[in-house]
Length: 295
Image 1 (cartoon, rainbow, N blue to C red):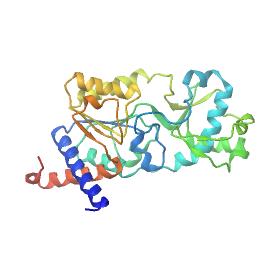
Image 2 (image 1 turned 90 degrees about the vertical axis):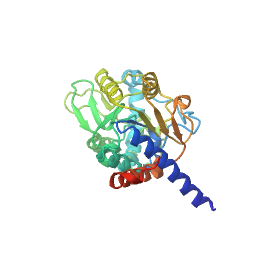
Image 3 (image 1 turned 180 degrees about the vertical axis):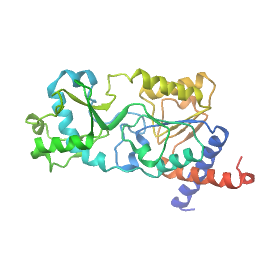
Image 4 (image 1 turned 45 degrees about the vertical axis):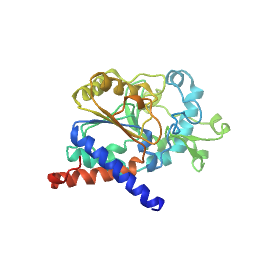
């Protein structure tokens, strides 16, 4: 048996196991992480051992306090936006949308800020850490689209328009520190206030209302499915603890270890982009021919 055939059979077996799990628990809350979006060209935060790659992320309190950090963030974001804005949902996102439309899963709770679940057609999505496509003024509360802000950034900083750089997971990029020195950070066109992406920075808390909504979804679910997350960040891992405490089974589809490995009912180490479409196909087949369901 060649490697390609072996991988294909392994993926189909894994998909059958996961389809069976979802058949048993059709209201499963799906918690997704950065690993789901790597096939869309957005880099992951961590390696397969759950160790964070690259530099220490900007902390929210530091961003709001230090104009130099604001300039650094927006300069990197201006360059990295080309990658983020061009990212499209991959087969994994589309498969979850199909499973949701067929009532094979419950809500989607995502740690990602890329907006790809909604672009793929999923309807019941809660973005735990916000959405990078939106920007808020901390002065007057005005809201802007990130695409519109890009026009302002490029007009004010023409020297960075053609800069090519290595994209990073946060939607920004690694650029020469000297390029940041003369960078003009954006300001609110209404009040001149500080602009901040509508995302939860490290060091900040998820808004209370959003946390309450997420907890309500976990309470209503009959199981938890983790897709593409190592769960090293507590805001995601807490849902595994809640599920375990409530006696709800937990499955994970993730390349590499997770913080919740000892809590899992089912662990599949495979590509979400490859396995989830097979899961969706199997579920559709079971809907059409109930007598063929696998045990």
